[in-house]
Length: 95
Image (cartoon, rainbow, N blue to C red; front, side):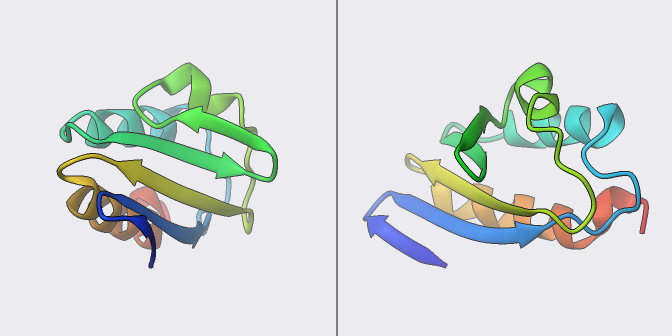
């Protein structure tokens, strides 16, 4: 886990499920991210998306095996990143 400021956290994860970030996992990610007050982004290469927006997440068009950087800033950033990391490791319940 990288810490760039006291309240900014980033973590690299990989998409493990067969179909990548399609509508169901994008909706689940947005729903889980909304549980935190931190500002959370997903970054794929030069593209980034608001983790609380399903449409933003889908715009990444991230397929299986793609590397994604989770980045969060705010009071509960560390909790948010840990929670979302586990969600990615689980393959969104599809692995």
